[in-house]
Image (cartoon, rainbow, N blue to C red; front, side, top):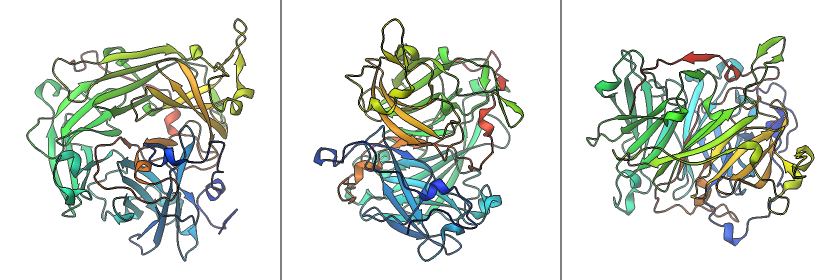
Length: 488
């Protein structure tokens, strides 16, 4: 059923309207196992069904139907749909949101009730969607104390932690969360859920003595799988990376500082993913940073709030081995100024979508990206040095684009339309995942079987979108970091 509005609903009208098929070509046989997709993290409310569709009940008994539509080639944004068979979708307090994904697994959260229940864990259900075999959904049960908040969630496949573990283990996985300890800033509590036993375990993770001082501070908000053996990285995009052996095989936890050039005594109090991203590709940790040009504060609803989507000055890409060898260090692979990105009309695909908003360089007569607000980097999960950005004329516009930039050639490669009606400013909106690899784009049929290590994203739970609301993440206050912060 196609709805245009629902009385008593708690989500946006735009969440009832599915994205159009778009401007990109239809999937061909060569796209049948596309390796990754950019996925909108907020569900659309629609009765859409295909071979990816699976169902599960919330704790209240309300049945949820989930369908993935992940066949769009980046920079086009894929999406997923949620529906309540037999019930009006007004039973949902807000749009369900993806909070983590790894290989053929997706974790999403849903809340039944009304707007005041959105941040209430007692009203929140967390589910894991699995594509291996026939698509299925499992509710994780009670969230406390394993989820003090619905973010900082990691997923680890048994086939990654135990290579060669046998054909019968392809459906076995672990869910991990890391929370601050109760006594010291260098202590954390690690919770691990084993899908085979259906039980949680927990233990204290303490960093080494060199980090045990009052100035130490690390608040991870993203999780990535590092490689074989169960090593995972809990990443604070402002400060550094906590490496943890989540299966407790005797590898001590370690804290890795970000590259020295990216460390500062003054850290912006905003969502770091506006300007930074981190992934693991082919055994290397890739870290993306944007240096911003500060602007005068905007005035919104009579109050001053700094414009975090200020025009970017420089973009840099750093990497190091995911094995964290002692003799290895961060390496700067690419750096360039955003105004220097080459916009070649004979090279960039679908440039016509963005051309009316491009400024022309007086000296060269070529179009440039100057004047656009470019934020939200998403590093490609392929070894191709591509990075995808959100582009807007104004950060509060309800229309936007996703642009693909080749870091090697510094060229704009492709442009995709992004519907930004459901996004506040440059709030969290989409992320890369590899679940598209496990479905045929022509049929949606699951192709999951022997699962190898894939890319992962993990994100903070998106804020509820309401008209007139401003995003707390737009504050440009700063936090002082002591000079004797840990060194490598």
